[in-house]
Image 1: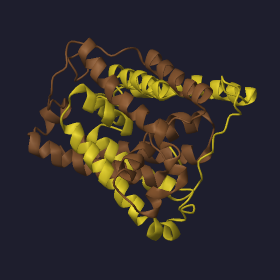
Image 2 (image 1 turned 120 degrees about the vertical axis):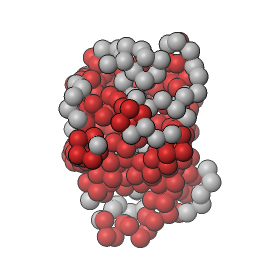
Image 3 (image 1 turned 45 degrees about the horizontal axis):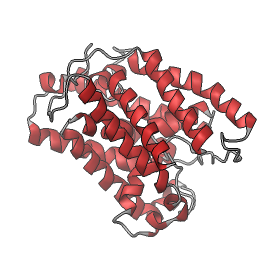
Image 4 (image 1 turned 60 degrees about the horizontal axis):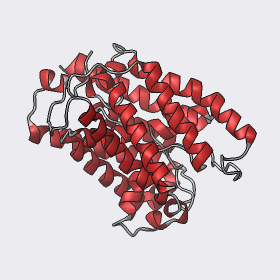
Length: 148
Length: 167
């Protein structure tokens, strides 16, 4: 199974790399409404993904016959505040989390600094979770804000 | 518009979107997992940090599949460069170079600050473009719509502020 995730990650990374999703100029072009490319990519992924997901959930089992078990993400104020902080970070770097890794693979050296920042940011968030949970209405620590 | 990497012409957006959907659906149908990348940052943090948040079982249970997925994404970038004109280390950053023009030290600082916001923000939001924007929206989850609208709006505001107001 480990090989499955490695291969899926490789395909995912290759597609992000070649489609412009891991390209600083295409990300700025998206936010400036000058490039349709990223809207087309995300839109197509959701338009195909939604009925595909519906079918898999309706079938209810994986390829090996296990029941499908996916947890819906909880709703909390972090969806908005965290989303806004992330959006600014995406604009600054031209990378969302996946493309940080893809850009490192491509040989873009500054992406290593983005990864370092992201790990420190995630580390600070996790360490501060007990203090952030009440004011931001986050789920209990054991649940977290949502995987993904 | 060519890609920054080797000046390649990007694949059509429909092909890119279909490829991402295929990965998402395979991950669910074969692996029984929901696509998501940013929790992988927590998995990496959990390798060295010992706070209760990084010791929760729900996180530890997923690192066995998320870490190989993340490693694959780096590998995908390497393969893309090698098969597309060759791999070499670079500081090239497209529009940033022509409009802002900072050297390596400035880029490292800029990227680190942006990275902080990405790491903290995605974990506070409970997901990123893949977990909320692709999987969450495909699964018709309201928190994902809220998060996606929030990060898209903030990105639009900041990029427009930077490239149309400040510069």
